[in-house]
Image 1 (cartoon, rainbow, N blue to C red):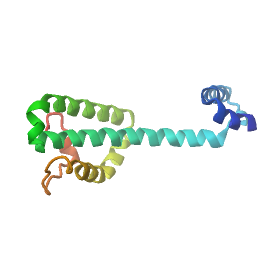
Image 2 (cartoon, rainbow, N blue to C red):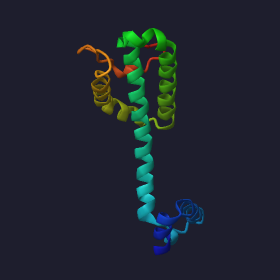
Image 3 (cartoon, one colour):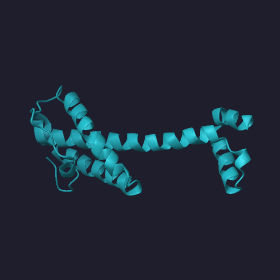
Image 4 (tube, one colour):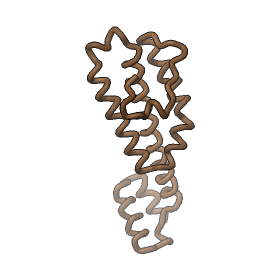
Length: 143
């Protein structure tokens, strides 16, 4: 067991192979339970970070389309493509993880506020700028 904990630190891929073998053989004694639980937890957190990142990028591009007038003509098509891409990535994550719909609804207001705060440095965004999650996820909504 101690060897597996050390292996987790020195050769992560080999540790994964050892865990896969132990699971396939139903060898409970060979499991590195502590590190395995940490890795499972990290996987979930990583997926949530990806969702939040795509959501931030989607919101940013919607705001650019709505309010960044000086750059809109030059970047309009690119920003629209990005909106479609980020929306698709979010939808793929939601398809793989249906429970993320609730999580996304919970974090959306804060993510939206953070995006507005950072992009207000670049261009004017009115105070009454909030776009509901349902609307921002509509396929034909571009701001």
